[in-house]
Length: 218
Image 1: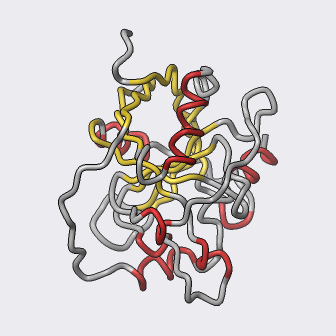
Image 2: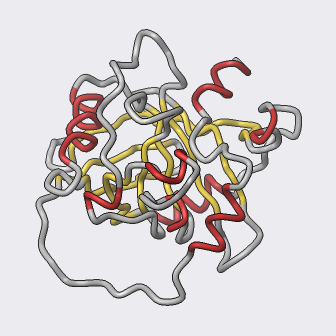
């Protein structure tokens, strides 16, 4: 199980992650009002529901991949297992991670990377982003931002390839951030996880009972 935790937790595992996220966060972000096509899904957890608007127009590859997992029931029964907590900025801060943890019966082949500098999306509060080891490996693990983590966006001028590509945002929480916060606040097991991830794994992972399109009957 520790191996699965380690593999699935590659997102944001870079040792300079927290430092870069803090340094790169803009003082003020200008938001332009625009309408883009989205598809909403509901994550029904044992602690409440979370509704996410998937950016099917701006991040079509990543959103379609997630919808395939939803439509094929591949995320039913997976868990939120990691709560990375950051002590800077407005609290709570950090990210909540969940997914299939490389379960061979659930995961599909990795998908093409959609960097934020091309999609126009950003790791702001409520953003959902794909976990991956390197571009092209993202499959069924994802993270939700508790606060703005714009240092995780793509930076084409960065020397480090991790930050040059960044991570792929593909949607935003529209309802249920209080549920995200409640799960994120749960106790972690100081003995679980390896290296950078040690002490970030939830002592009692929270089950995602069902994931469905929001327009489907329960």
